[in-house]
Figure 1 (tube, rainbow, N blue to C red):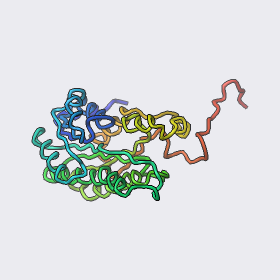
Figure 2 (spheres, one colour):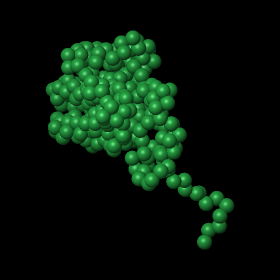
Figure 3 (spheres, one colour):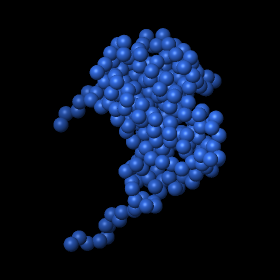
Figure 4 (cartoon, one colour):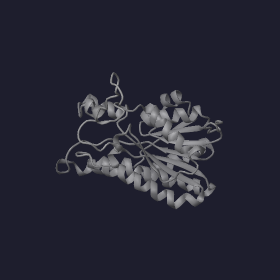
Length: 271
């Protein structure tokens, strides 16, 4: 069997939101390594210059993805730096407060939805207009395993990420005949600054996550970047409208309690 062409983004122009840290930064770095010209977008303007150096990006734009005016400015700015936008990776997001609905602040709930869902919608809408004009493009959004099933105490994040999944499918169907593919990844618990903050505050016990995950560990940001770049690349040229769990088997596991440990049979005789 001969190997096909390697993933190559040479000549492709990419905008990555949430690009100053975590999954966004790692995906931007990999896109650059694979030949793309990249602009980072992030709310944390002070962190962008160092992220540009770490990733090799062409430049950066800063703003709140939950604001239509800021999104228009960021997309226009990125297109001006790059000469257009062919690829969009929507990684900007914030976590929720892990409280039951009856104790939740409606203002905080709305903010989580604004950044994670509305922000993804606005970025897709603004960058999508450019892609519609050129009749080509690829978008990868970031959903979550929290958007695939119910996680008590995470109504804001879960609703937002479930909405991202539905938005992804809708846009894939709207724009498919225009040469634009739209997919999403649904990460499990990944070693990002957001998750580190939860661990530092002892919001949850990491061993509970590891024991519930068939692969037995948290994900690394690079593993999310690989999945995102695959979906953005020509290797996924006939894939659109997919929400891909990148979760170490989390969403596949349906038994009660921790993952069942299967004995390998060493030291036993066969029949």
